[in-house]
Image (cartoon, rainbow, N blue to C red; front, side, top):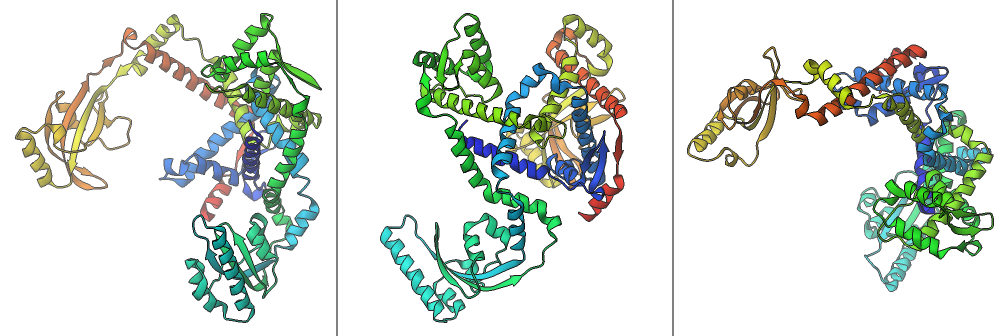
Length: 579
C-alpha cells in the first residue's frame, strides 16, 4: 500500500469520524442502550438515510424511523455485549480483523501526532475571529484556450494587466465586464460573485487571497482556466454564533485546511524511518516470493499455508536485513496478517515486493509507536470513534454467537430437519409463470389478438412483454409471487395449460385504470412436497437459513432482556416534524 493510498485512508477515516460526531444534548437523544450508551437523532437520521428506510416504509415515516432505530439498538447491544463478554480478549477471534485494527491505529496516531498539532486553541480562536466578515467582489475573466502557447499566455497576461489599469483609472467596472469578461454567469450580474466567507477561504486558495484584500483593491490572478481581474467592492460584518456552539465545526474545518500539511509531515517522517541504503536483500529469497506471488489469488487464499509449510519444513530463509532487525518468512507472514496485505498479480516483480516490505516495516514501526501511546486502548473499545471497527466488532460477535452455533449439516441432521419441517418449509404451492402483453385500449389488444389468430407467434406480437408469476395456497387463494402487486390475471393464468394463450383480458390497474392483456402460460407447477432426494442442496441452504434466523431472534431477545433500553419516541416525533 503506497503512502498515497495511506493518505486516502486517513482522509476517508477522518471524514468518517467527523460524520459520526453528533450532538449528545438531552433533546437530541432518541435512545439509551446499556450503561451510558446513547443514540442521537443525528445518528438515527443518517442510518435511516443510508438504509433507504424512507423508500422501504414510504407509507409511514414514523415506522421507517422506528425500524431503523430497532436495527441500531440491536447493533449497539451486540457491541456492548462483545466487550462485556470479553470477546475482544480472544486473540484467535481478533486475528480476523488485525489489519483493520492496524489501519485504525495508524489513523489515530496520525491524527494525534500530526494533525492535532495544527488544531491549537490559538488556531481555533483565530479562525473564529475571522468568521465575522464577508468579502463582496466582482471579476472579469479571460479564459485560456485549449493547450495555449506561451506567447498566447503572455498576451492574455498583458491584457489582464491593461484591464486592471483601466479599473484603477476609475472606469466603470460593469462596463468593463460587458466589454471583456468571458464568464457568462458572472457577466450577467455585472461581474458580481457570491460573497466570500472564512469558510470559503479556509478551503480554497483563490478565495483565501480575495478574503485578505481590502475594499477598492484590484488584483490579477492566474488560475488553470484563465486570468481573473478581481476588485473587492466591500467588506461587511456578519453575525456569528458564540464560539462554544461553533467550536466543533471550526475544528473539523481546520482539519480540512491542514490535512495536506499534516500528511506531508507524516510522509517525511515515515520515509525517514527506513532508508534504502540500510537494507540488505536476499535476491534468491525475493525470486521465490515473486514465483509464489504470481499465483492466482495467492494473497487472498494460499499465502498462509504456503509460507507456514515452508518455514515449518526448515526453509525459513531471510528476505532482508536492516539495522533494527530482519524479515524472514515467519516475519513476512506476520506483516501480511497484521499490518498490510499485498496483492498477487501475474506481473509482480522483486521491486514490488521490496516496496511492500519497506512500507510494511515502516508501518509496523508506527504501530509500535501508537501502542506505546496506548492508542490501542482507545481503538479497541466499545466507544471506539471508528465506525469501521464498530462494524467489525459486531461482525465478530455475529460469527461467535450465531454462525459458529449453527449445527453441522450432516446427512442425519438434514433428514431430521426435512421430516420436522416438511409441511411448513418443503410444501410447494401451485405456481404459474406467464408472459403478458398489456395495452391501454381494448381495440389495440383486439388488433393484437387478431394478428395472433392469423398465425403470428405470441413472441412476435410485441417487442416486449411482462413476466408475472402467481401462486395458489391450500385455501385456493391466489397471490402474486414475491411481489405486493395485486394478482391481476392470476385466475386466467391458472386456467391455462403450458403453452396456451388467451385474451384480450380486461382488468383494472389501481394506477393506470382499465387495461387489456394477452397472456401466455409459460410454466406450471402442481402443488406438492419437495422430496428429500430431489432437493438436497436446497434443504442444506434452508437448514442453515432456518438456524441462523432462529439464533438471531433468540440472541436479540436475550440481549434486550439483559441490558436496559430506553427509547424517547417523543423526541423522534418532534424531530421528524421539524425536518
